[in-house]
Length: 581
Image (tube, rainbow, N blue to C red):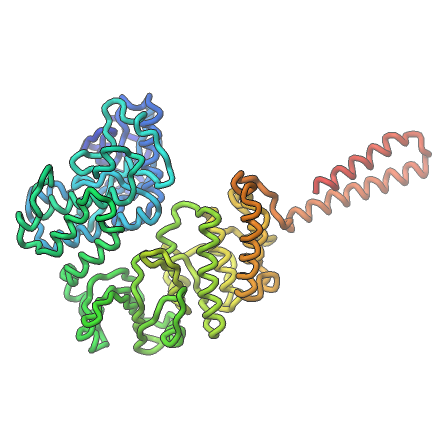
């Protein structure tokens, strides 16, 4: 096998129905990589090549610590498509099941990490469709990585899978397929991945696959208990309505069973440090995120049995005063604050837990216009309430726009400055405009989020204004005007209050619904505001023609009107030029 560009191939490590995986080295960085190459017999099949290429594109969009990362992609000199992934040193769950090395707590932790990966994918409308032990890797530190999205699809895509099953290529692994996947691929939803996860869980805890009229898992492994037994059987239900509605529900259930047993003792001590009553009132279930200024934890109240998020900050990052104010206020579009402790230099904030994740977790694809408007309106209502109570956000980002399990929108992290300080945060958005905290600044950042929801791109600002992405021009002129006004460099030209913005969006929404046929055609509309650069070009052309006309006038005055027809044609061309601009 030849080397591929900057990558040197060493040996084959796996082979499947569509492709072969090799271990190699990225020469420029001298690091190991996994190289996946489509089988040669499939390169003349455009459907299979398209599906193979789709895998790399899907994984490249998904950015999550429990999902394999794509580094590069291309075509070999033999015209075989390939893509490069980070190499995971360790094992896979299939080997782990055979070796029987993991105890029950380690197995629960493994499934929890798979749930986090699937939850992120499902929130972005991606279904894996081939969850099985061989596609769940475990690195040397115990981190779980889901791989092989080769037959994944987006919910809103429709595939003619009957065309893709030629060459005896089965889309999925029969032993792990849900009943609906075996019947008709058009019926596949996120619930199909949940069924496959149920098969993996059954096999992980019992050592055998649930085939035919299988026994309850607790009958084979009494150690798992009745609660876990019932959860696995729910996942394996042939009836979709009887399965858990999301992997977040499975994850939270397993975290309650695990009771933080997977967390190291030093991490547990750090979580409750400085607050003596924490251990008496709460159980630590999980570490959601760690950064160099603190951490975010998931706790469970021992009496109320409610899940709560605790954010610890060891440096002054702001947000302390805002959290204290919000502790006594409630709004359906703002995360509830249960308690604040410490000082503005070292403090913790206790807040409600929202299992639906953040907007940052749901932005690998642009949003449909009506859906985006609904979310923006909910954010506006939360901001309007906060502004009315003299609370500015000052740091609105997709990561602090959260969702409940039923997709209700809530804003979090008022007043926090963490995104402006620790620059490795992937959610740090590269805005050219930076302002001090104000109502106008909150409108600016909301406009930036709106723009990115619709286009999938951060807005780019130049000295003369917004450089609109081509996809932005496809939206109705009214939407372009709205967002460009929100993004204006001059605060005076933006909306002067969130109330004003809400009224404008409501009126605009009614107008757009009346014009729905035009929107559905996805017609391209010109930008509603001319840039300064375009205006400068316009006046330069006009000045040129004015001076030219003046010269012709002087010439005619001195030498007579012998060429009147040409003179008239000159001014006609001038008028045409003016109309273009």
